[in-house]
Image (cartoon, rainbow, N blue to C red; front, side, top):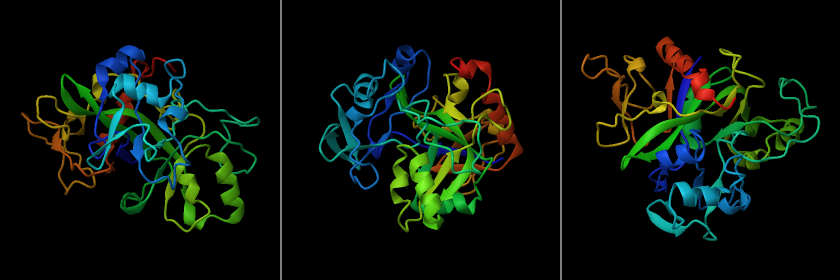
Length: 309
């Protein structure tokens, strides 16, 4: 099983601000959430605005309300260095990863969460994650596919420092290469994928890939669902908070592991720097194909990290 640490949500380029971690944990009973990144291009996002998308938390608060409460109460957001009002006519919400636990949605009748992907009788209601461009090429080169696990992380703010922390996960059950689907499969997945923004390219020749969550529960720990959000624990913090910068990570259990997209550098094995690694600030998908990474991931899936399951 490959482990992919995938940066998703607000960052310095798309968002410019970060969720106040302590405020979020206090408001949402220690649950980890993310705020979807903003987009200027409406091609994939069907006019979605932050004020139009509801979460499953805080009594169905919209992401505009969550943003004001947890990120920036003036509702300012940045895209590529320029500041906008979050409800500016050119700013759209990109809800990807599309994790059903987070988004308020309706499931059509007939949906069976335990069915696998061998029938066209399934209706709408699957979690998924879409990717395109250079990131897709990288994931393809790393042979990421069914049975592999994405760990999604984002930027947060704690003690006046920006940090990286893991908020959710998705075990891959199906890989959809949008440009290679038959007409029947196109129609099926257009129904199946709900509000996944990357599904808008399914009927085109774009090279987008959509990673659909496995049906049912995790392969390596059937006690837990195949995708979802974590409850906070310190093990989910990636950044070494003694350093200045969110890309200075320290994960002792990954000592000696070499992630992709990082110039061949490994998590330190030194006694005084065990588990330290500075990751590329422009990296999106750090893939680890190592039994030590697999062991570390399995340690994250315990009752403490899933109080609400």
